[in-house]
Every structure is written in structure tokens, then in C-alpha cells.
Image (cartoon, helix red, strand yellow):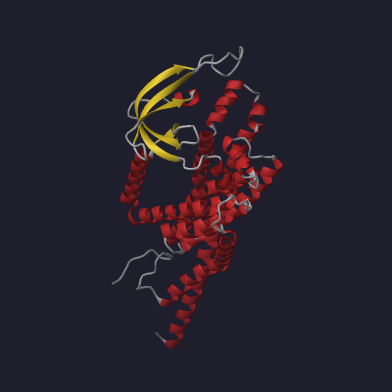
Length: 429
């Protein structure tokens, strides 16, 4: 069966192609493999050396010690809600704390565990009661067992969100597979693999006090090696995108380390980082920030490099005779449009994440210079700038790698074609 393909295509090779074309395209992948295989081997070595030993981390042990043995989490349904005035003594004029506070008492029915079917009273603090409680709301309660002369107690832990999150996840999977089909399914499998690496390697490694930047680089590289080939197939395009992505990750790690050190980011601007420092003294909060910057760059780098690699190959297929300089310039025109839109994505994503901090700063009306140089905002600025630089520079690097690759193939094709024509001329055919 014959297949029609654009000239110079580097995708899956049909049977009808000449053997020398197949050989030269394999050579194109081999050229990139000379660089990527050592990186892949280094990633495997890093995984083997840094992989957690399975022992419970000191942070986990410290957290467990703070909870009464036998404590469990159970689901419950709200039956009724009662608001209570829990205002305390005033703190004076100008205080950010409201003059009046409203707490609540919730009557909820336990749905699981030893007390299933029992109605219990739960005291809700003012800062939580602001979220609003209504009958039929589902809650997640902490059940503390009886201890000495203290009876069994229930306290509010969080809202139960299993049902809506499960429905949303299923809807997401259905939409992705329905639109992208096999590639969408492969992307979901890759996402699951990334989650496994994050939970089984990166998080335990960070809790065990391993170097955060090294953990971020090794884990991110492992994710990219699997995710890119799984979602886009094994081809020269994907390999080109992988090279650009790894370059971007390395650049983000270097710039992030420099910026974090120069800007003196402590990583102690959030309550979560403070809690981590308290539970595990070996954790470096500033390193956690840097590791987060590396992980945050994965998705956007993947998007940009795949687009650029595809642009180079597609332009080459449509016009295989384009000079390298012209091909690079044409692909970069596409890349510049993509950069412009993606930079907005990065900035607005981080601005949304820092919105509570921005609102607090607006309330206090601090000078602009103090606002942007404060720890909370400076952290987001470093994330944005470092991620943006890595993203922007990954575009020309990916484009250059793609152009060099397609032109090396073209040169070999021309040499092979010329030698074949010479042989035919000498043989009189």
C-alpha cells in the first residue's frame, strides 16, 4: 500500500520510502540521542541515588506525634447551623480585626466509623464560619478517641470535597479523550506518571532533606522523558522538543538559584513553609521555593517547545529547500507570537496565586517599593521572571536544534541523491 507524505517528513516512516531515506532519518534521531541519552542515564542514576529509602521522615513522625493515637477522619452531613456572637475585647481603633466576630455551632450526623448515625455538635471558629455553613453540607471531621476522663470529641477539619472533585476529574478525562482521542488518553497516562513521581520521589526526597534543586531537576527530567514521548510519540520532533525543554529546565534552575540567593528569599512568607520548618528542621524553605519554580515551569515549557519543534518540521516539509537562516527566521515568527501569549499566562497565573497577599498589601497601603520588594510579592516576581526567561530562551534554542537537525538530514539526502544519480549515469540507466 502506498502512502502520500510531504517531502522531508520526519514522522513515522511509511513502507514505501526508500531505504536510504529511512537510514538518514534514523541518523537525525541518533544525532540528538548522542546528547539526550547521557542526560537520560544521569536522570536514572539520580533517581536511584536520591530515591527515598521508605523510612518515615522526621517531619512525618513529628506530625504524627502531635495527633492523639487512634484519631481518624470521618465524613459527616450538616443537620442545622446556629450562629453565635463570639466577640472579644476590642483592640482599639485602626485594628484590622473586626469589632464583632461570629462563630457557629453545627449539628452534624456522622456517616462512618464507630459512631455512624450519631448526631454531634461541632464548634466552628469565626474565621472558618465566614465560609458559610448550610444544612446538607458535607464535612470532614477529626474524631479524637476518649483519653483518660475526656470523652470522644469531634472537631471540624475541612469540607468534604470527594464527590465534586471526582465528578470534575471524570469530566476532565472524558473531554480530553473525546477531543484528543488516543493522544488525550496518552496525556492522561503521562499526567498520572508525573503524579507518581511527585508523590513517591520528589515530596519524600524534600522531606528527607535532599538538595531541593537537584530533586526538582531529576524529578522534572524523568517526568519530561516519559510524558513527551508518551503524548507525542517517538519522533525527531518530540526529541527536538525534549532537548529544548531540558535546556529550559536547567536554565530555570541556574537562574532561580542565583535570583533566590541574591534577593535573599527565605521561603518563610507563607504559613505552610513555616509549618514545614517547624516540623522538619532539615528542610530548606528557600530551596523549596526554588524546587517549586522548576516544577512550575514544566507545563509551559512542554507547550512551547513542542509547538516550536512542530513549526520547524512542518515548515521544512512544506519547503525543504529553504536555507537554514530563512527556516529559523520563519519558525521564530511563530515562536514570538507564542511567547507573547504564554508570558501573559505565566504572569496572570502567579498574580492569581498571590491575590490574597496583594489584597492585604492594598489594605495596608504600603509604598509601592515596599510592596514589590516584600517577601511574599518578591517570591512571585522571582517565579515569574525566572520562569519567563527560561521559557523565552527555550524557544530559539529549540528552533535552532530543529533547524540544525533537519538541515543535517537534508544535506545527507542531497549527498545520497547526488551519488545515486552519478551511479545511474555511469551505468547508463
